Length: 212
Image 1 (cartoon, helix red, strand yellow):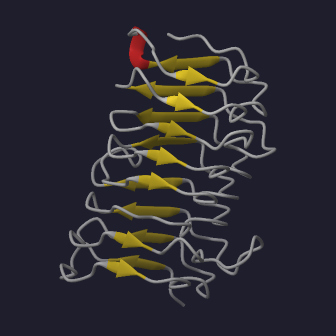
Image 2: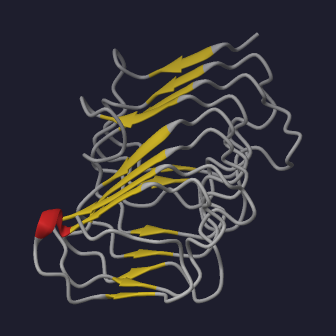
Image 3: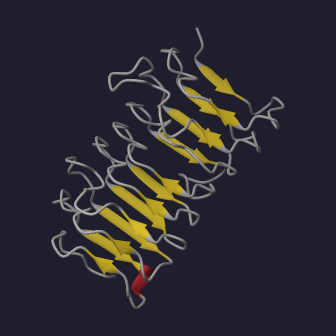
């Protein structure tokens, strides 16, 4: 029974893509470590997750370690209900990856994730990537290249009301679309641009936001 996949001691320099459903029928698999796969840039695609349904065949995958070269995660991580560790290289989360876009459903139903940090390479974050993330209370984004957060009138977390802390650093002009934070009644601390002069936009019907 396959319980772990660890490429740390093997030559995986030529591996650049992990395809759909690669681990969808491995119910005992608990961890994946691709940290030494320096050419791995595509982790799944934008069409199908590794686990095809919300109930999931693989419900035991707790840890995924990615290489810092990763640029696309698509919706590979969707429906990984016990995934609690998701990071790249020696980072604590995804802050050291080269991901450019967080698409719709990217982390849907990842119910064990408690915090997530996104890298400076992210340019856009689509609608509802965090729906069903019932433990994700903290979201940190290095906004160096972030231009747009969310889709108008579409909450990032869908109907899931859980977020407490949102930080967008290194950005003074991000466009936070109207309605993307409306479902977050417990959102108490929002820090944007670390106190710099904010010239972006925030939807007028969102929760009260302090520009810290």
